[in-house]
Image (tube, rainbow, N blue to C red; front, side):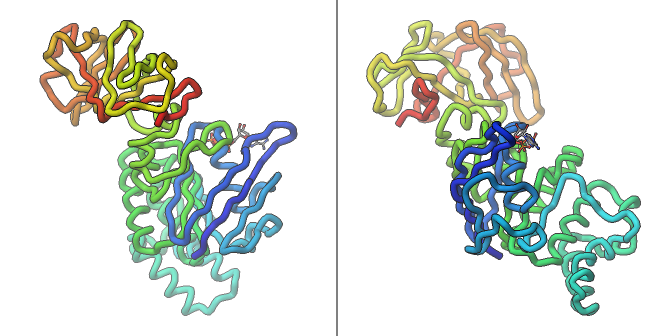
Length: 352
Ligand SMILES: Nc1ncnc2c1ncn2[C@@H]1O[C@H](COP(=O)(O)OP(=O)(O)OP(=O)(O)O)[C@@H](O)[C@H]1O
């Protein structure tokens, strides 16, 4: 196991800069998730750590050693991809033991390592099977087993669950988390799925446009998003945003409604701001003096209900567990509890 240090790392393809000055220190044993929309540069960063892409600037250190010039096979890390890349002509045991056989390890040591990993992953009954006789989930487990037997310094996961159906993804996600609890191996996991990031990570690195937007625990990002991008990306359904102006202890919405803040912010009175509130934090009220919104669509999810509203003519969502919302009238009143409000300045940064 090892820490991974990423210092001022840049990547350019020709004149196009796809990663800008990335600085991250991943602690020994930590599970860090790189999350962001397609094209944000997360896979490129992972591939640079693995040695599959050149580094245009900066330094990457694994276990305190600079690896910029090291060949992937000399970095002692294991990568698990979305495509399982198993050898079709080898059975499960053969696939899992391949790298150890290449290293000419003793047969007994190899069998023990394979047996240990197979037990952890529930692969014992499948050791003799070829990949074509396995389900997608089982193949992904073999790919993980192949990584585990090597006891690498770190695991790098590149969207490993993307090929699986929703239920299996959920199950494998929990298995990966349990496995990490067990192995405590340094892990970097790339995904575009914010739920995967929230549920798996010790720390999330939210990326956008080749720039790290925020690094923190899942709840830090959920409770205190550093900017509009993170606020909108983390959480589903996504946060509602409303244009407003700062009025001291309140913000004023476009229609003149004053929304009280829990405390004053360091902003000049009259400053343009964006008010954010998550759909699950909006209160459906019966008080006619609260803001009125038109009901456009009702989506029952089983667990709860998503109300698509039009507030001051703009789309606005509410998530509620209250089933009476299923029969909501054409108009509802909404209230914004002060402790759940987020305010962002004109540049989109969280206002403190
Ligand atoms: N070989 C390449 N040549 C030129 N540009 C590239 C190359 N590989 C990636 N890029 C660009 O670099 C940017 C980052 O790509 P990257 O694959 O890291 O994004 P990503 O966040 O992992 O997206 P996805 O989830 O779609 O894989 C993109 O704009 C992409 O078009």
